Image (cartoon, rainbow, N blue to C red; front, top):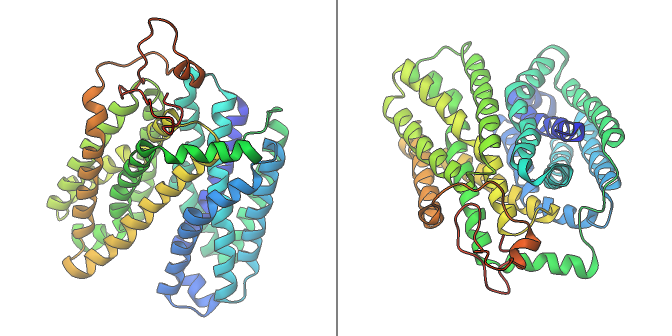
Length: 418
């Protein structure tokens, strides 16, 4: 695997750590900014909304640049957001800072995934995507507890200064280690041509599946702490250890899915959703029993957000691997986070702390239903997905079909149809 792929993962780690930092520093930030805990919670929502809405527009803005200048621009914008976070003296200033970092993070996600596909052979692209996305998983495993630890001992502002320093080091290492590549995005007429892929109705179904997969997971993950302490009866001191174990499960699951995503793109998601449905349902039913509750929680970690490499591979085979498509896909993933966490909170008010788990199970079931048409057509794994050129100009006697078993796209507006 090229070294640059691991450097891109480090960049995502820095951005995910910044995203999660607020969750671990709520009391300190509330006191420092003269805000309430709920207002600090809105900073998390603002970050997610900025990612969903602003990320694709920033991706378009840097699409005319070559990879190195584009990454430099995104690192600089992200750095500005974190420095503003560190020096913010008021809640409105912090809100602006979180919006800036959220927009930059989403655009970076899309560009990093696109570059990973450029840097690697087509046969191992799913694995390359998994390596890049391990930055997200390790951010969950280490970024949150480390940022919380720094904030508790040195103050919450020190956390954002530390993230700023990490951003500078990561940017320098990435720009030195990234080989010369052609422009990853599009401009002018090419950009208008790229936008046409969004006319593909099937793409929106694929994107919706990703939203449901992540929504199902985050409806549970967002409320693990109160569920474990108030329903399961776990001590507050034990919860951080369980969250670290959950993060370790996501790293393991992401690595396994990355190795399977290229050959079993649809099958991985079907099994992942089916298992997540079982784990979420089991957690909801047995949340009052510590051993099964913890086991089901770890199961959710193994098959939840870890579906990302397979989800991304499916999106790229439906259209292309360019930054705009990847960023829009990331926006739909973030939309799943917003849906799972916000609706989950509403269900708690109405039905209690087990309700988000039932919501997650319902979303997983809907995601499974959205995959059934393609899963029914898939008969066996293939060794390699056809390239766009191959799919558009099939060789004589070649039966045009996708690796994941879906029907070929024949409509002029159906995207690449790979």
